[in-house]
Amino acid sequence: MSQQILELVEKPVLKTEIPSFAIGDTVDVHTKILEGDKERIQIFTGVVIARSGSGSREMFTVRRIVANEGVERKFPLHSPKIEKIEVVRSGVVRRAKLYFLRDRVGKAVRLKERRRDGGAE
Amino acid sequence: MAIGILGRKVGMTQLYDEAGQVVPVTVIEAGPCDVLQVRTVERDGYEAVQLGFANLPRRSASKSVRGHVAKLDSKRSKRRSSGGVELVAKAGCEPKRFIREIRGAAGELAVGGQVKVEALANVKAVDITGISRGRGFSGAIRRHNFSGQRATHGVKKCHRALGGTGASAFPSRVVKGKRMPGQYGAATTTVRNQKLVKVDAENNLLLVLGAVPGPKGGYVVIRETNMV
Image 1 (tube, rainbow over the protein chains, first blue to last red):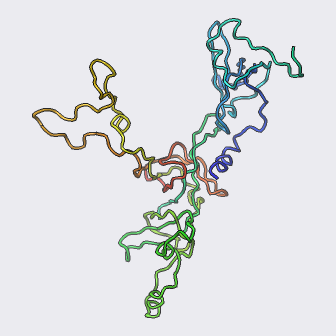
Image 2 (image 1 turned 90 degrees about the horizontal axis):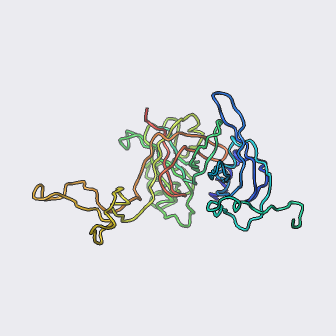
Image 3 (image 1 turned 90 degrees about the vertical axis):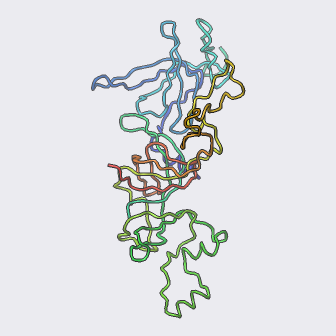
């Protein structure tokens, strides 16, 4: 019963259309940021290494390498500040959390691409 | 009566405000509460309204509990009413699990009436009283945020002990109120001036900014805050 009540409360803030993206996908996250009083869109591109939580509390983590330094950003999936999420590329992965990527540098960071139209490369 | 209601803590979640900021809220299922008794200065020496929340099945309610909320046909009540004694007004509702009084003049409320969440529609902030989660007999580290002792340098088998509790010849006793291990939690706790995010009259729900004492499913008393 409690769970149903919580879902009822969360429902209005949930986004109706979330693009289906999976762990290992490379995504463009469009976030609204406020500069002074002007709003503009900033894009953060990287690999989705984790999704956590459920309902309005769901978060996802995006990792990329900037100037040889690993950068991770964790976004609330249903935040109104996230304009859209675009899948650029899908990767072949066998686990739900790609924390092993943190220990890798250079070429080892790459993931094998998964073709959406079926069949291997 | 001061504006107040009884409820049950459902759990916490998060919402977003217009600016896109996360708003942590506690969801409370509040009311509808039946008015079981009205306390008056003449009869009781103080003014209050007794509310009851959450039905208890009749089969598991004792006769005294059932008789508190509704009229029972007992020999004694028959004898009293035939003898001309005016019986106390009863709410005539189901037995209640959670019964509390809220101080203040009854106003328009009478025995048998109901209090719903709409009563809090214009309230900005509330005080919430509940029973905090019980942690049992806890040490000083957990209970009072002591730091414990060192892991090495000759500390022997007392790494989480609280250390000295007094001085020497003076005062040669432990001062009163010294923080020590003991029962922690399961005590009545009030959080004050919690902002109300939303009053959902349709589903009898209250959304309160921040945390509320007690476990999920714990009963709480919600009153309009008297903080300025």
